[in-house]
Image 1: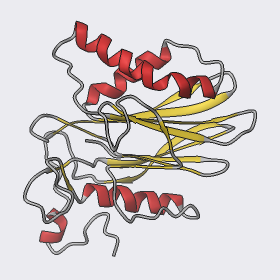
Image 2: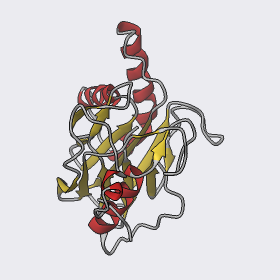
Image 3: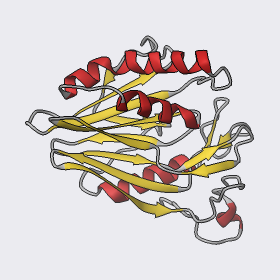
Length: 234
């Protein structure tokens, strides 16, 4: 699991991601960037994935080896390109089974037009076929029902969203702090990436220093010590 959230405004795309890579025991095995740039002759775009840590790297390599004349070409080819990259990798490296993952790509043309974001899943979901791309103005993964993004205050709103994602249990159907199954799977830091017609910018806007390699994510630890809880929305 990872946090990947995309919000499309008329002249800018906001992307908020976390940083942890987890092993099979949900222990932090690494920290790093999960959003990678795609620069064409007349567009700027990004892509990101949730799932096993190697999914994003494989997709990044697949995109790097291709040329796209326009942003539209990238969007049209994206689902099939991701599917082919998965099948090719799994056929030569059987230990790198992708499992279920989701991917989003978002971009903007330097020559005008409306910014675009498409999402896809490696499994059929909600009546949508696997690897089929769906256009959306807002993408939240994992989803937080009822969350409303504040386009006037994007950084504050992005920190609130990823903090909420970090504080909830995920997996096995768990989606609330009171659930008895699942695990905490979002953490490390909040990275804010923006895509405009002038380029791509990314920076870290919030950190959880306690999320260290070799540790598990424990968002309730501060609350049990009667200290302010990092990422609290109250």
